[in-house]
Length: 421
Image (cartoon, rainbow, N blue to C red; front, side, top):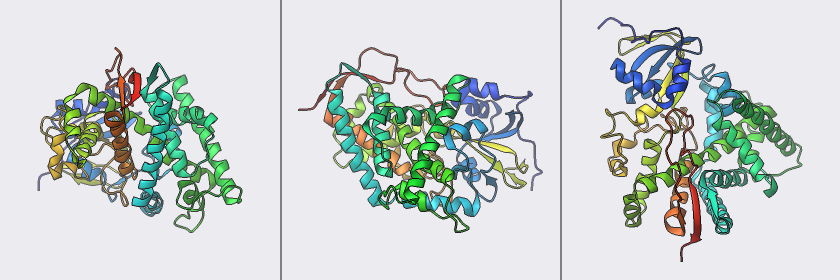
């Protein structure tokens, strides 16, 4: 048995600024320069381990070795996740909460979501056809927010749609920002949590009666491992953990527009595939190819050795999500957009394609709404390809691998929108 060795170490007092400057490429750049899938650095004033690749992902999602408690930075908890949310739990508490989420992701409930979503798309397009120009990203967020609220049993008057959409979007648009824009995200989280908390209390007091299959009902009455109902604030956080990520699918939808623009040959391939199998590959390739989450975090649960490297208890650890989805050891020509790569079943394994996390949906920390994300993207692609025509005026469609989250800079502007005859 070879002796343990030091992880390659990035010299310097702290590299948080470098992470912000390099964004999605920070870990991948150093994996290449160190020629190692694991290295040590310093982030947020503490030692951190960064790693990527399939084997690293499998290790990262081993709940005997890593925990989520105390891993997410404060700025992420106070914008993206919320405090005491499912992403920050471990062991039985996490399993209990995750089972609650998975109960909402049944085949029947997913079908309800898609039916609502198609109706909301149709309503939105009717409005678009009367406008000179729309910014697709902004419109997609509103469609998704509206669908999410209806599906979750959350009442949302039409006059509040834009306000609530902007508040929810700020939760995922501001975690990596600094100054006023970041504080806007924190402020909006407080507003949204107060809104959801009031709704939970109304449900419990019998003033509002959502469908029992909805998130509002389920989370209002859910009991934890000790048999106690979630406190209203925690229930509010978890309802937002339904509404916020669904609204964030707008990023993937914007990249769907971009893929059809950048790779026009895909339109013909999608049109010639009657079974929808190619559409599945196309959507998966968008999720692999374009940036979404740059990395996810955890802490070492107990001392252990892996690949001759020593991991010390409580060390902050980052898994390179973007880099794993672009790892040449896992993907042939990863910088090429090539949906046919998903003909090979092994390319969909749970530790290889990890845009929304890896591992198990129930026992692990993989996003429970991944299936809904894929189906919503299919609805979007269907409308873009088969239901409407549109023009894209000259605009800046580039996207940054530094900005987190990234999206086409123009937001994808449409003009001359019409229903197909």
